[in-house]
Amino acid sequence: MPRWLVLLIFLAYLVPCLCLAGPYRHFISSDGTAYLSLARHWAAGRCDEAVNGYWGPLFPVLLSGLLLLGGSAYLASKVIALVAGLVVLFMMNRLGRRLDLPPALRAAACLAFVPLAVFFNCQSFLADFLFLAVLLVYLDLAAADRPSLPRGMLIGFMGGLCYLAKGFGLPYVLAHYYVLNSWRALRTPPGERGPAIRSFLAGLLAFAAVVAAWALPLSLKYGHPTTGTTAALHWAAIGDLQRGVLDLPHDVAGLIPPPGPNALSGWDDPTFYAMGYWRPWLSWENARFYAGHMLRSAAGILELHFIYVPLALYWPIGHLLFMFMFKYKIGASAQRPPRTLSPAARYLWFSLLLYVGGYLLVMHNPNWRYFGPSYVLVLLLGIAAIPEWGRWAPWGPAVSIIAALATTLASWRAPVADIVHYLPEARQFDSLARAAQTLHVTGGFAATGMWANSLRFAAYRREAEDDKIPVRFFGVQGRLDGDAFRRALAENGIGYVLVWKPAASSQTWMRDYERFDQTADPKIQVFRRRAPRSP
Image (cartoon, rainbow, N blue to C red; front, side):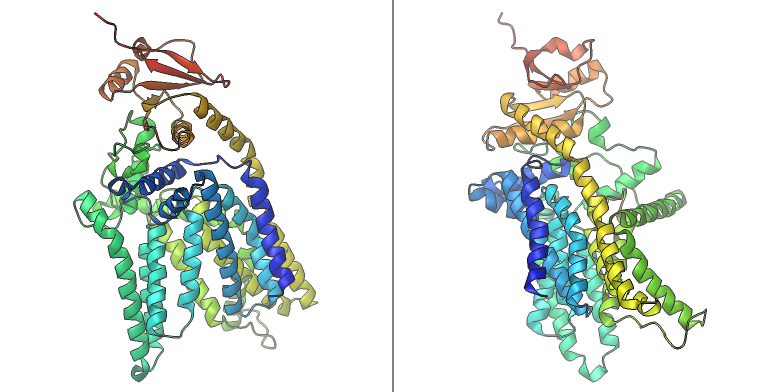
């Protein structure tokens, strides 16, 4: 790719990230608070609390390393996200070369993803962007059909990093690596399979070593062999949907003590949530609900791709349709038959369908950030299919240029709109972070509502003191009435209660608390437990 194109892509990504770093400085989701808390555990050497079956360790470990260098958590997360974005764009260029795309089309694919990369950077306290970068490195390495022991071990190691980034990386890489190598072995003469088998076994051994290095402490912590608890909680969440329960326990069940003495909240390790055991094969009713749930999830996944990579979906699907019509002689012209898919395109199609299908099996709620890898693969396949459309249309080269530009611009609309849409919310988080600096809440606290914002307040409060004071969020009142909430506060020794959007009437629990402080934001009030009266 010409240097001026590389520079254009680099600046198109770097400049918005730097401009938005300030406005989105305190933008953190509830998942992000858990990653931040785990990073603090790693940085402080609290390995017993850092070991976690729900959240992958790769992102908090990298974040903790930057924290040990003296930087702020907010800056450190931006640095990780920025580097992850550069890796993603670099790997998109490499995968584009495997598709034999000319430099202009590779640049179009990268530029089409830039706004989405910037949006990922704005929400930098999440592991999804890091997972995307690591997974693309793995996919690029696995795409090369040049078996050798070092390459096999490197592929297995990168597959293990995918697992350490997100739990979904374990089944995906295992299935991807096995099916890919089995297919290649079937197409290789029996007498020439030796190097490929040795490379496959070396990769499998390296992958197993990385997985075992994390699965062992997990198994010791939870008391039974396990590689993670993410899938179990997702199954349980699907079971709750079947029963009509739309909320997670922290929204409705009352107070949930943090799982460790230094944990920020119960969300640090949802493994300990009291959720039922559910699997689709346990009963006919479960299986029937699961089938309907997968159909609804498939529609949701397709909708997300039509939102974030709209035009890119049409070109490769149209190419496949051309091939089908030509094969069965449905109006296809013998003078201009469609080109068959290249080996690289078939490889990316396989990787894409396996990724989406794997998430479809265990996902309880489609979320845009889960599908970064599929957005990238759809963009690459879409851009690669555009020249095929140019062959069928009059003025083919002009049509290809217009289609590539339209695909790039169409992919900008949704992420740019999202970045603008979340700016007011980012300003609210800034205000909440400032409030956390002035309200000297320490120890355990609860809230009357707004679980996510209360959790953010706890994270901001702990960061304001550089993790030197214990701040532990026990949850919200949920469906507890005043008396039950009062008993729960007493049983857990809660010293402070946050009241959001205060109501005019008082509640029973207020008898034990007094108004402590108020910020400039009238929506937040803090109550402190009354000191016991001296006899």
